[in-house]
Amino acid sequence: MMVAFVDEYRQKYGVEPICRVLPIAPSTYYEHKARQVDHSRVPPRVRRDAVLRDEIEQVWNDNFQVYGARKVWRQLGREGWDVGRCTVERLMRQMGLQGATRGRSSKVTTIVDGVEARPADLVERDFTAQQPNKLWVADLTYVATWQGFVYVAFVIDAFSRMIVGWRAASTLRSDLALDALEQAVYARPESDALVHHSDRGVQYLSIRYTERLLEAGIESSVGSVGDSYDNALAETLIGLYKTEVIRRRGPWRNLEHVEFATLEWVDWFNNRRLLQPIGNIPPVEFEQLHYHHHESQTMVAGLN
Image (cartoon, rainbow, N blue to C red; front, side, top):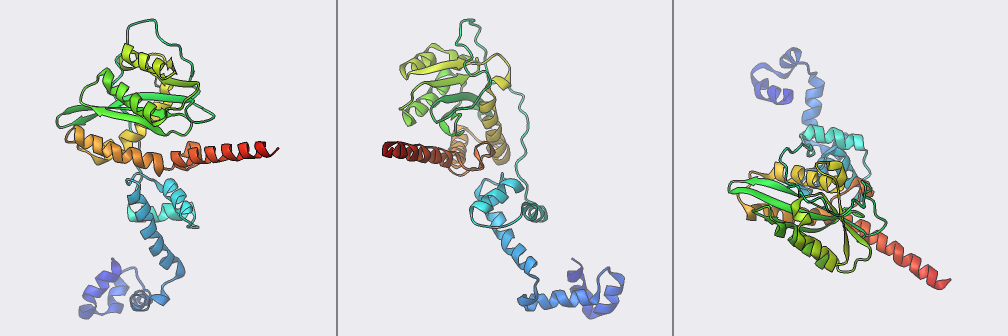
């Protein structure tokens, strides 16, 4: 800013008189001008910062502009950049880049079923699994559009946080959750001793939904009423979805607009998003590592 001011008025007042008024030494001004002509005079840190700025902006844009400094730093490391986290934080501040900040939702999408007879809570807030297809969690949320509310249902594998099924609809009906379940069952037909956990919403306690779980050999588990901790893993994913897509990319026109954006986000989330609980790698990579390790152990056991 000060250099530009000197450039503008140097012909009228001269460099030294202007610098006596401004908090800048004439030598600093001349050095800055010299670097614009001879780039070899630019300090190495300044040159590297310029390159890093481009890389940081690329990572930030490639990941829905939701990554903060920690995630950007992790991704740069995966791409081979040896850079300190503090450097990434400094440059992102200078560039005005910020990650998405999660907010809170007040609308309730769980319509509680009044029937007392319901499946037991088999999870009891322990959302851990030793391998894929052992525990699925399901929940749904809403998106306000110009044509009314759109509801989106998800089914998540607790092992890797992989979204194995999802569906969007303009009404909060039982078919919405069932369609997401059907996608999950189709994508992962081989499941043994699989537990499906949800809240007490009527969508998940409907006869059609429970019958489909039985047909697929999936055991149903249901949490308590109005307690988000009893379905915390699904609530966490929905919180990310609302923060990273809905609140940042709206306003939303209609169902089709939401569906396309959700499709893009699910693909990114499963294949490229870094998740801290699974070691700052994407869900698909986490599952690939699991299967590779399992195959290696099987081969070793066969040789013994």
